[in-house]
Image 1 (cartoon, rainbow, N blue to C red):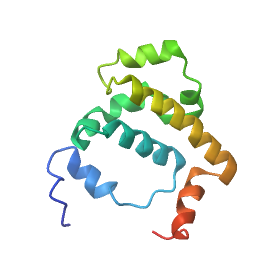
Image 2 (cartoon, rainbow, N blue to C red):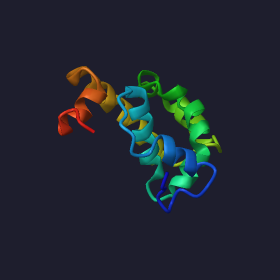
Image 3 (tube, rainbow, N blue to C red):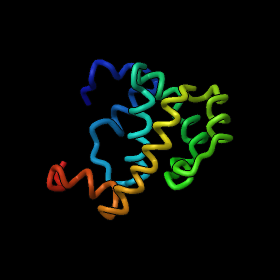
Image 4 (tube, one colour):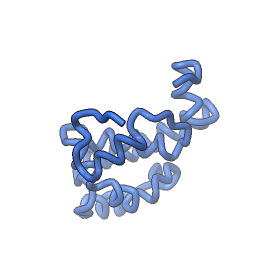
Length: 123
């Protein structure tokens, strides 16, 4: 398999080979990617890959319903967690994105259905 030049580390290689550029239809996985991409803004993807498991644990296994209801106490807990990017705006964006994600699911019958409509369901 040929790889992109950025896929060099022990974390990046399996991500590249098994996830990057692959068609995804699972809403929870799509939500995870949405949030991790937002967390990556201004940082390297390698940084986020290193923190990925900590993100999964900190954000309730990507349960958007739980995340959408996070309160100030939970935000403070997240901002004290060294396993994630401790940026108040990125944490707030995660909560807002969870709320928007749920609204899209409700309106379109799934986040997957919403996204894939733009390409006629074809990858």
